[in-house]
Amino acid sequence: MAKTDLTAARLRELLHYNPDTGVFTWVEPAINKQFLRGSIAGSRMVNGYLSLCIAQKRYYCHRLAWLYMTGESPREHIDHINGNPADNRFCNLREATRCQNMQNLRAKRSTVGAFFHKTFGLWYSKIRVNKVDLFLGYFKTEMDAHNAYKQAKLTHHPFGRDVRM
Image (cartoon, rainbow, N blue to C red; front, side, top):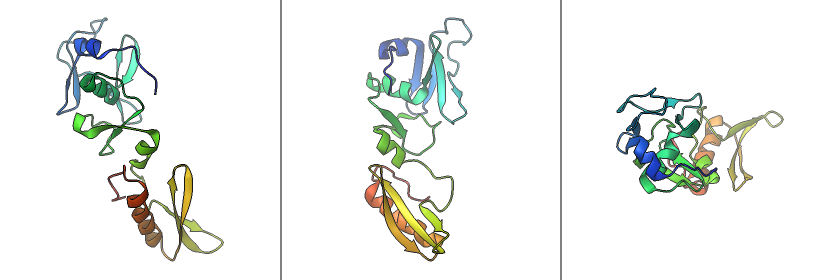
């Protein structure tokens, strides 16, 4: 991840971060006086993350929260433990590698890891571990394939806490 020229000290001069709510508020009005002291800083982006601009540069709020609380820029990624990209409470943030961050993605479909094989007319399951797909077997039902995936996820993706998918 890109390092920032913004220091924790400068960030604290400009903004206040409440670790219990994950909300940033302006301490010092922005250079163009657009924001009032005490007003909430940041806005939701299309991807669901919150971001804000400082000195004409856009920053993700979860990365700023990490800088604010630890005094250091994150080495790589910041993972939202509960999967909600707008929840920037400090207890919901943790440093992660890209691989770990991908383990904690929330699925958009109900039977993750289940795929239909048209030739065999069976469902199969696979899981990606260290950039390699592991085949988990063929199954008669989509739900059986999905359950095999969930079980493998507990073993191979310990960073992903939620297996309700």
